[in-house]
Length: 137
Image (tube, rainbow, N blue to C red):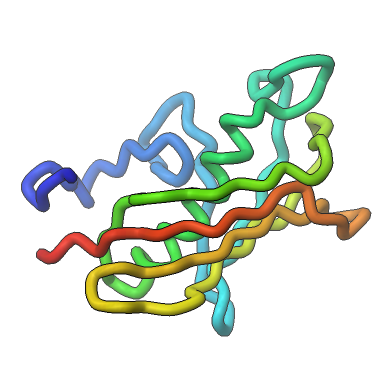
């Protein structure tokens, strides 16, 4: 695990949410009730095969929406284990809604759930259950 001296809050270069990453996705996450939410519209640079969004991008979106639920509550965490279910392909140029929620917290472990929902058609693109280790400051 990374220690706190390697976390740079002034120049966030995270691939998914970092505002200073020139090739990043630049997703803005927010807390809304019990969920962390964001939106994303994949483009041609996010394709895996046949104009379908790459599975690694899908995983990254889920990982970050869950991690940002904790981050926005002033807790730094790292993914320890993740189960992912791809339900439907996501064509590029179609917007999705991202949702992350805390399922339970036990000590330094947070159990999270993440969803990617097609904005217009409202179907689930992918979902995830994950365990995150809270990094003590």
